[in-house]
Image (tube, rainbow, N blue to C red; front, side):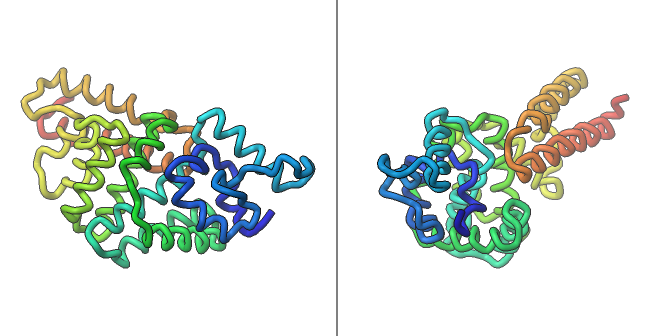
Length: 263
């Protein structure tokens, strides 16, 4: 296996459609076994014992099933990262510094360098994020989509300044990925703790006028929705964000309980 093993292992649906078209050239430079527009399609006359062909057959089967793997989610997120980083017309050092540790956790030091090279290539492309989000939505479950958007919000807030252009792009992406307005607002509320006195209510998807019983019901509903078990098969980073969101739900509930003196 070549030096692109870090990113090829476990890829499925992203090797086709608009995402495959975006990453094909860049990955082809890392892995000379790519053939044609199908990226990993094996030559029918090649020997089945060839390790590269075995890898190709495996990826082809995964594409057929339509099931998203952790590798698919990681690459999808990388494409969306590029869209957000370019949204305000500049790429900030704080954004790059946010992305680097994430990539190191995914691929190790060596793999992260290759992933950054892929990101650099994506930053130089015109990305139709509408078609990209449509492709992702077809293969990724809702709970994982929530955490992907959560990660994008982390990126946009990496420098402490949520640029209007980035906010617009992420909100649009969230809509394209199928998130409800309430779910997106609940995620965004986590970044308003020092600016919006009603952030905790928004995090629980309720109004400040809600009764105590409605607050308790909202907490139980949100705790179930964001339980880390919902994304057990996703990447480590996505699982981590789910855990953070789960804790934030508890923080919001405790904040409201304190305000209302709820026992």
